Image 1 (cartoon, rainbow, N blue to C red):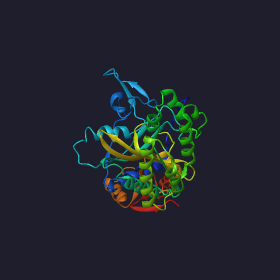
Image 2 (cartoon, rainbow, N blue to C red):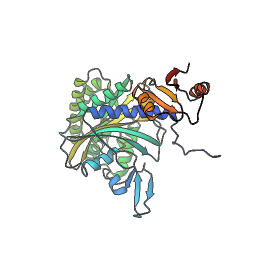
Image 3 (cartoon, helix red, strand yellow):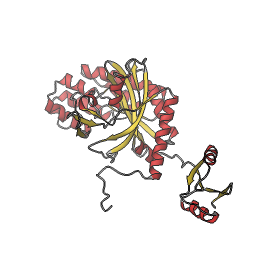
Image 4 (cartoon, one colour):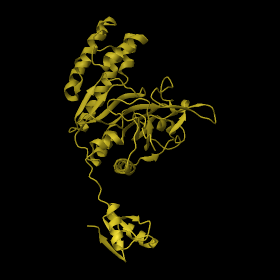
Length: 376
């Protein structure tokens, strides 16, 4: 084959990488299942109306679109499994008792990548708790994230909490037009308040104070308490301070940062949102609160590719053995019960040939004449 060029952001996962990614994936799912989470597997693509139902404008610009040749309706390829879990929870699983705990793993495709993750195809893993009391499960979710990272041998990390609904409170308090809103979002993204005084001098003062509060949670929560906010913003800030204060108390050894001004790109989070970063500033997990059919929910997810880059999981030692062609099926079963990975020769070989073939196929052992031999 002459042309093997893949589109930007797509790659082949060759045996060694695919094995590592599968180990990250299986380690996570096993941990979730022993913590009472049910495994679900949504489809890769759906009709647009169901795939984007959590979004206000019923559109996700980062999803590929295809035309279904059978129904002649437009379908979207998922870029985030969380919204599918939301659909399932209020549909197929609506009769299950709450809180409903589900976990998942699957491929997602995105039209655009970003500076933190250049891949446009990724394996997303995550867990969601559906139907909870408001602000009632942050502790469990954070604990699960920490346990997941410990299982993957990722030691140095921190968590950054944000306020996804702050921007809507600012819109209401200052009656922002659509143009002004886009300008404010841009300023907040860049942590720069220049020009906000043209909208409102008070908005400029509040924004400067919020920018100054970005960083270590323990230090900056005290700053937030001293700021004089407008009515709607004040309610959001008070709720945020209460939640983060409780998390600091519950996790005294966890490095916790806050960034009230970070814009939530998912557009469906309520309450709090968060991202977990490695010491190298690689995004490991993200998540937060959201609502589905008036049910309060919370969850988190991550991508196996990013987790693998930061993981110090040791390569699993495998006992791989070459067995002769026409081996008795019982022999293969018995060897596998003893922990061997069996690789069967494709033609009849003598002892010297089978030893050479075992070395070629990177087998640690070979079986010949009813006996097991080490390759080296």
